[in-house]
Image 1 (spheres, rainbow, N blue to C red):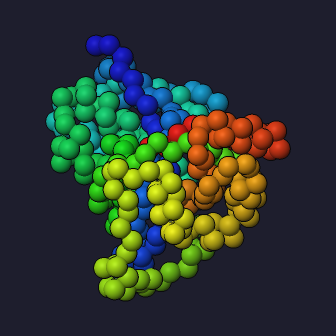
Image 2 (tube, rainbow, N blue to C red):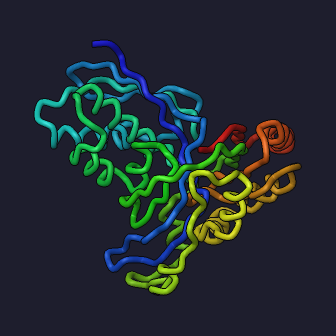
Amino acid sequence: MPMLTDEARAKVNLSLRVNGRRTDGYHDLESVVAFADCADRLTLTPGPDLELKMSGPLAQACGETSDNLVLKAARLLAERVPGMKAGSFTLDKVLPVAAGIGGGSADAAAALRLLAKLNGLALDDPRIVEVAQLTGADVPVCVNSRGCIMTGVGEALQSLGLPKMPCVMVNPGVPVATRDVFNALGLRNGELLVGVTDVLLRDRWPDDKASLEEWVEALAANSNDLEAPAMRVQPVIGEVIAALNATNGAWLARMSGSGATCFAIYENTAEAGRAAEQIRRDHPGWWVHAGTLS
């Protein structure tokens, strides 16, 4: 059978609210999620053996191949689909690792899409849905890779019609472990940060016809609750946000996920491109991408 290919687009948390920590230790979140036009590339060559080969500029940062979420997702799906066809995956890794943009989760989601195509499964097949949730909290939202509101521990998704958002994404080259950031947040099991009234009166997000300006205004009225604890873990995150805010035309600068990747939204792609060039000049060791979110 011919080789299959898919793109694992970077996930960006435009906002992230921590509503509390459940008694089971998981954190209850609400996040507006968009996807960028930068991506890892995953190919699947059908065959008898399930394996993963790595390539690309950031392949070495991924650690042991046996621990990769691509293989975890494939193995979990094979346990649920009798006689599942699989093969050899090759991952071209260009997205930073442990960076708050769901790179590993997007890779796993791409693997599920490829395996679904190879085996004639729908993406809403209960087995695909279950495996996505078991593989990682960000995997379900990455399976569809479309703008949405993500709630709970990542399992509840509500689609959103986001406009194209010209952006610059920056990672300073330091990995940030999500566990360390949540530890810095310091919530106890069962501790809530919002009450019933807060949930009932929470902001309604703009509708599908809203402009970029309306979305930026709505996002600016919210925040990423993990930004402050992430800065305590890696203070360089503050430097990244300051560098983005110092560029001409930056409407909103914020950290994505648990960091350390940060982003800024601009009025147009030309301004975003000039901002990216400035940051590359000033910080040649940082990973910088100019593009769009949607």
